[in-house]
Image: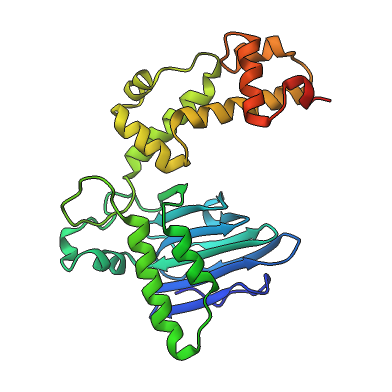
Length: 293
């Protein structure tokens, strides 16, 4: 169950509660300043957040952990045997949907024989699955309908429940050749850890990053699993993520003023200053020199 929402955002509230097995809430900050919203969870549930506009920072108090939820992105959370206190810090003009569902109820939506499905037993007690990704096609549209539609109480329940089922189906829809009906929760903790290790290797070796083949071998994944998992976890392909990270690091170095362009270029992985300048302009629309003016 989720306790009543503190309505600090003047628009954030629970819109559906089906015996605490499926709970839906709106996170809405229409104001021009940041606001915070605190919620206490008193039952183990799977969380799914979809951000439509703006951005939200979500704090899990007991684990001293926080994560961002950005516009047009989704985040899926499960922590075994754990009922957290959540604090949402909503940026101005933010709209998001939060869905909370029991593991049994989630499995039941995808198969009548839930005993044959994974039930998160491979997750250690107190450990968390947290996966973020850019919204898949259709997710934003359905979430927006769920967020904005206001009906009379007589019809609200059936409308919200139907849209949640549509949203979950769209969110979890498998695009690969999956002919077996199965619970579609994100990859296990071990796979996620390997992908996170790959990201750490990349950003720790900007001057000489390994190839995808080398990186996959270093973390114990095949190239396909690395590419697909990385995009699922971080919302961008490996190469795209690396490009944006390099440029952000280069921008920080320029702002610090301790290195010139020729010194920065090799530190972020470019063999020549001219190649670096071209990449910087592609990212920010100006050359490094123009940026510092």
